[in-house]
Length: 78
Image (cartoon, rainbow, N blue to C red; front, side):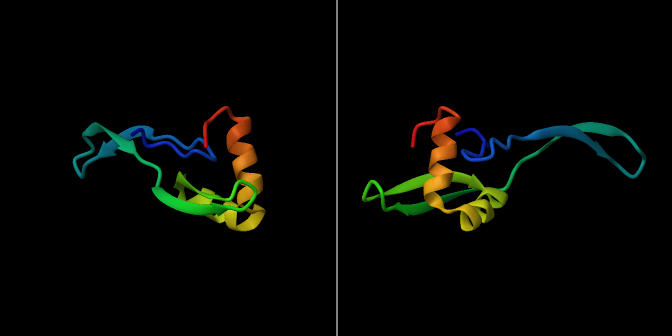
């Protein structure tokens, strides 16, 4: 599975590791992706989402119904 948030679309960023001697090598900054299960009352079922930690906080603020509407607006299946 890709390291991608279903709500915010957060994906890995790329950059360089810099050692003490200042040599640079490529590295990857992964988002903090977690699988979370929510009850969706409008459909009477649970949904399992792959979310970043920031997206979990967003769902706490706006609610699961609004979050699922945003995910579907982006064209993702829930």
